[in-house]
Image (tube, rainbow, N blue to C red; front, side, top):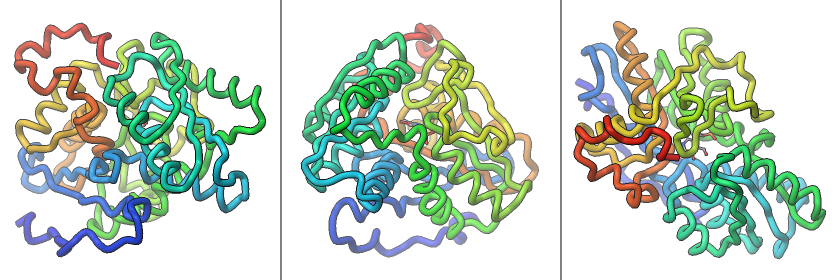
Length: 323
Ligand SMILES: Cc1ncc(COP(=O)(O)O)c(C=O)c1O
């Protein structure tokens, strides 16, 4: 029985402050999505981090890396391009550690992101919405080049990003499972796939397939990128990926709803995209564990209306609207 294999901890631990409590997220089985009795699908609920996303791990790693290198001092301005989650995580941590934060973010993200960033005291500079996260990266790089007083952690090119997963997320997953046939995550900066992928390949070799969920070109899903858009983040080593599978925007939304309706998991849209690929991979196996990452929760997407939309209307959505 799957339930007997769950090792529930009595409490979430004791920490000196909110930043220290990042990580140690639960791994939960999704029995209704598993296609065969011997195949188990597990969701690593990164939505259970303090600001509601996997990026809390990355933001802490980026700040601590800069502190260890002596690259930043309290009062200094930190500048970072983001599609939202990294900015929100950095904003929370900067507010605790005494740094100012300026984020460059596409103008067409959901208003909840603006509210959360403002709530934690960050300054927001908007980049053109039609250029997506690539536009935010280009604008932030220009701003950093023009002002030497700011420090840009640059999650797209900073090894502290994948290392947060190599030393954190993957270690926690390995504490719970001693066999993993496939690991599925979305491709944004590539940090989740590279850090977990490296650790899981070191542990299981080629028996564990590393699979990226990638949005179709021109159908962006918030948080994810298509490598065909022309920018390959420097931290990405494509040879670590066994497969890259495209997801349509409609599938991302309908699987976000399936996570909610069938399993009670209230997740963001990229998690729907990732879940759809995890289920597809699970269908190709006869036995084994498939782990996928729920990158964030659904609160930041509520205003989009997708959680209350009648399911039969998802088919009719303009697939380019959801970012
Ligand atoms: C909601 C969401 N999902 C997935 C990702 C992808 O994660 P990574 O940057 O580690 O590739 C991100 C990254 O920003 C994200 O915000």
